[in-house]
Image: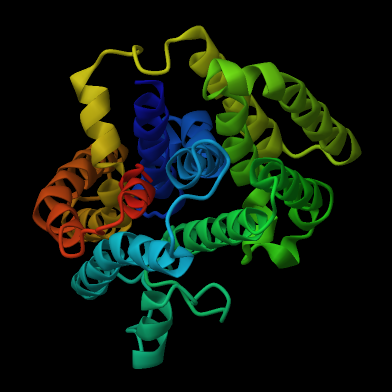
Amino acid sequence: MFIDLLKAVGSQLIVLHHLAFYGPMSDWTHRLAPDLVAWFSQDARMAVQVFLVVAGFLAARSLAPDGLLRGASPLGQLGQRYVRTALPYIASLLVAVLCTELARRWMTHSSLSAPPGLWQFISHALLLHTLLDMESLSAGVWYVAIDFQLYALLLALLWLARRQHTATAWAQALVVIVVAASLFHFNREDDWDSWALYFFGAYGLGALTWWTTSNDAAWRHGRWLLGALVAMALAALTIDFRERIALALTVCVALACAQRQGWMFTWPRSRAVAYLSRISYSVFLLNFPVALVVNAWFTRYGGADAGVQTGGVLLAWLACNVAGALFHHAVEQPLGRLWRPRDPALAGATLSAR
């Protein structure tokens, strides 16, 4: 389906961004295709905005498909989210530490992090490393922490709204308020980029897109709200143009069109896309440590030749996907079965694809 396409393409762009940004193989490839490497290095990271919007869209669909929070225990829902997200992530951190030490045998490079201390590893496991300004053990792990913060924030807003008699209206109103605060203030201040409020503009737009387009009744009442959201985002861009917010808005509009025109679940029909979507989280977790080892091996044994090193980049890209697929089947799926919630609402909250 369309969301599978977004996740599959987004995950591959993140892999290619890491391969281009963290040398040294890409330094050689830059000689052959400078514009392409520069684009992957600087612009492909914008795919994170796609993940933010899709994550908000899916979180709203699973937590509160009609705008009313399901499930009796928000803390239980949050705990289930942590288990399903953090256990594979912690396993990937162990792989990252081992891969870093292996790569250190073959090369010296700024992309190699220092051996972690106990508190550093614990802060990562608790998803607090960004807030505590700890050195990352792997590229991109900041997103896992932010995704959990965003989920917790949306859950808290839905819980607050459920305490009111008009819960659905309150839920949408609270999310709109926080989205506006993010777009007009927090997202414009880099000092907030370790906190959910910095990213909630994109995430909340995704959630609101689900609520305004999920069915005909929601669309009759919600299309005006969706139009107002688009106008609000455009106003925020007029005040301070940010490509990341423009992309997030574009993804929201695309999701709304897919939902209302009926091709959300029918296009594209591709088993390859669906599979790449399923393994996207594992690929995201494993791509940097795997690429680091390939970089180190080619640095030591590949020779000073742009063609050979570019071959190493392509091999690393393939290896990242193969490793991600193996990790998905051997680690992510088994860990995901450790705690199956009895509450159907909890199951829906956690089985939404990341």
